[in-house]
Length: 495
Image (cartoon, rainbow, N blue to C red; front, side, top):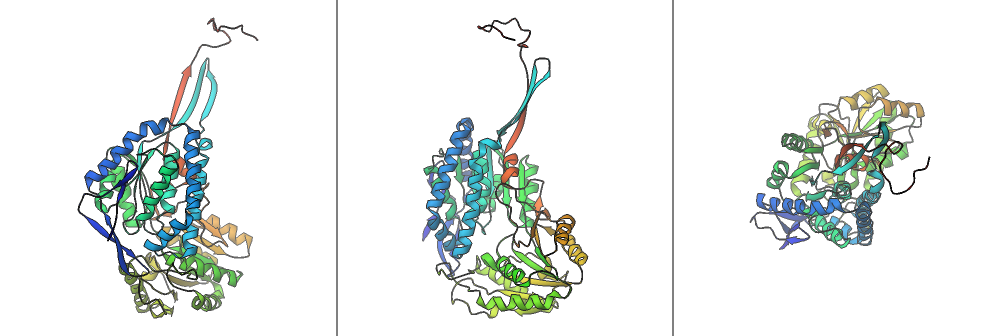
């Protein structure tokens, strides 16, 4: 059985805790590796390596840090196929999903390549006689990231690219369900010229997470995952004096107005609901059909679903892969049985699909007549289940979304520019798409939801990431006024 190690101070380090967790091939349903789970002592060793490396890395020039990011970007691009293969092997992503994840991750590396422009401070000359004031941005020190299973390459890049480029050192705790990509990224960073100790990976479970949250030498923690864990991360980390950005769960609604292009909306709903098997926090979970558009929209979505091929990532024709574990698949499937019991209509039941014999597969599912209060509406299912809620008016649709506990992403499909403009104003959600089903911001903006989808006030990556990983120092200086000073400058003054 293959074992998956830590990466500490520039090299692979086998776990010494004696504890491990299985890593499955979701498309085959079999264990393919075991990942060592870090003890408290092993986390401490990684943090110590990062702390030792910080002094020299902080002193490294901005141009040299940018050079490392440029080389890292080229290495990731050149090894794209290898990374995608790992994503498929441990997560189950099909080729299109793996390619999309890498493309969005590379965007964040490219943003970090421009870090010299992001770290410019301000300068005010002559605020008083002979007095100047200026501000500078400086790194925090050792920072950490705790990342989810659904994007094992992209989400770490949301964090460590900006953190390292701004002069911090980094400790990553990836998901134990698909940990191998983190080690390949560590190798590529070293090949790009990143000094040992600047980037470290500790594999682990809650033991590692709690030690990261408590460790006195870690200044900040970034997290993406479910809302209950995000709330715990935020409360525990801040109680220990750390900066924390904690992004939680979602229940993203897509509003379809009667004037919308139905084919465009149906295509968008299918790709946004079932891409990556629905295991993404920006997946469309609920379509809100306004007015009389419901029947037409249900028909348009339904006729597309048999054409969506479910299969392993090793098959280039597969459009949706398996879920991450058998346990998670069974949990998602339970919502189909529960929905019927609560009064919803199961239009397409993924449990009845023609699926591969082995693996953690579940077919695409479509529910109609879903209503607030039903589990299928309130919960983050995190799987290939799309619910349709019917309302009569635009105002009802907005009220429905604004009353939901989550506020991560939303979208509206319409030809009416006035309705679209009103929607972006009225809706209490952090990321809004207009005829765009998954409005994930490009890397030079920042990602973050509202309400129970985020804890604290810091979004992730982009400008918000630079702010999170730096702190401002303001310097007030006084020097002799050159116009009146009698100091011998060694050359004649001219006026």
